[in-house]
Length: 311
Image (cartoon, rainbow, N blue to C red):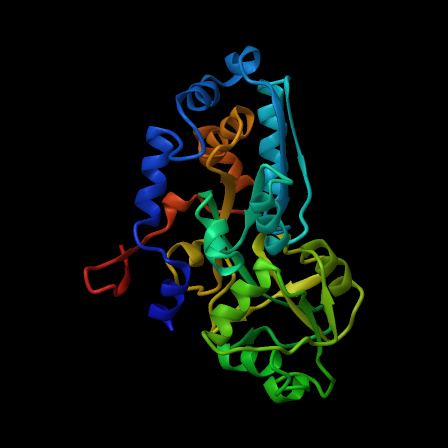
């Protein structure tokens, strides 16, 4: 499972790569002008102007919004705005040029054609854990990957089959195109195809929060930043708690890298904002404040044979 999980994420060199990007400036998506502007912070206000637009993963929209507020404070001549309509839509939009940034929980190669991907540049801005959540009335607090596989394939339909009460399981899924769904299914099902829709397919992470808070006997999945113990319970997987520390050392297996894609010929405002996302102002504090993990904090490496291990 471990080797398979990392092969999906193409994690080779990821932590070191981001550290290099943060230290040396943005690779791709522009030249030194944007790098200098972002590095100067508020001093960049006079030199950077324009409109930055984004769409994509709702899982880290709050992080992007928080960073955008700080960036616009320092750069009042730049407008940053967007939506969280899912990774697939974000990638399609940035490839088509209808937004300047596409946010995604998955690599663009999984959603776009090769000729579209070659015109984009990937920026890995954070890591986030994702895990199953259950209604407040559900007494189950730990599920194995095999049990999750059974529930989200429709093979397990009653909570009593996994140690809970005699009640029908209500499965709240995400719609196809969701990067959160793709990440969850990759960790649970591996390379197996799954077309089970469940009792509902929801558009956004916020929709899952709302529905989980008002539905008994339900199960779904969310990124850690959308956990809300006043509405539902996040549960263990294979006995491991869904916490960032357990993602960092890879003991919790369901997680994703958060990507921000732009065109190779992106405008200066977009380049400056992406540079800001990789700056200490965001990576040093804001990422963790918003419930995410800096990519450079991941304590995972691959040896020459491709085997994954922890530092």
